[in-house]
Image (tube, rainbow, N blue to C red; front, side, top):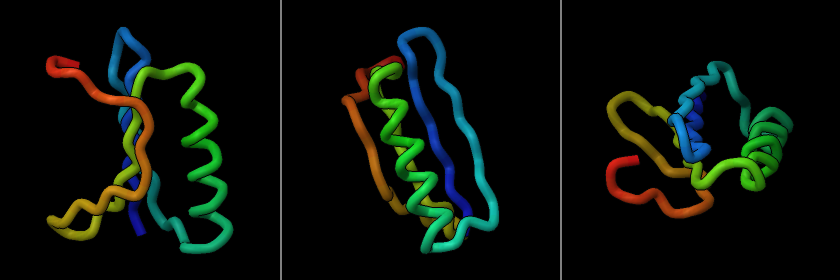
Length: 67
């Protein structure tokens, strides 16, 4: 599965894509790392990319307009 993580630290938005993530250890480790960024970023989203479909897996914070 493909996962896209987007985080905003107050100055810039950073997006990273991860390929070949398996629903077991890999996804659990990626989710732990995602939530560990909550202390340093205003908001973040973790999305599964499935063709044209986007499935929200996790998020923290609230994105404001214009961010």
